[in-house]
Image (cartoon, rainbow, N blue to C red):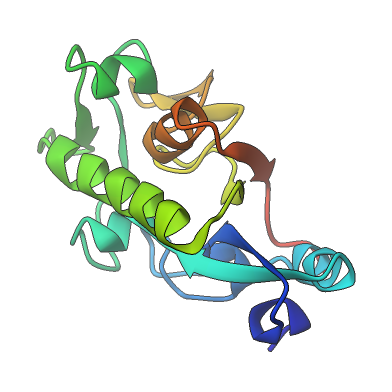
Amino acid sequence: MSDAREGRGEPVLVSACLIGRYCRHDGRTNQDRVLERELGLEGLRAVPFCPEEHGQLGTPRPAAWISAESAAAVLDGRAAVVTEAGADVTQAFLKGALGALEVCRAQGIRRAYLKERSPSCGTCQTHVGGKLAAGPGITSELLARAGIEVRGVEGRRD
């Protein structure tokens, strides 16, 4: 376990897969030991959160992406989040994003470190229409709208 998860420092929201939880859509992890060390050195306390599990999608689960436009379009009701098979999982993604925001507000979290390229957590890149696209995921967009600083982490660094 990292000092970042055990400390009493300032809390920061962290994608659970980045600190070793097996919660990716394929049941794997994106553990990032570099991030864990950096958080520990800065005296930050990681608060792990997986929006997709919070939205009750389970692990493993089918890969999903934003159907069109952007995460902003999903939050504004103009687009959906769908799986490879075409199932609409928008409400689960919205529930996960709202859950992340609730955790941030309840714990006074002002910064989040989220997994890049995820349709939930991506900050600079996510998946739209089944392809990698510039822009944030649903959770990143919602947290940014609420004034929380969001930083993208690729993951899997030793």
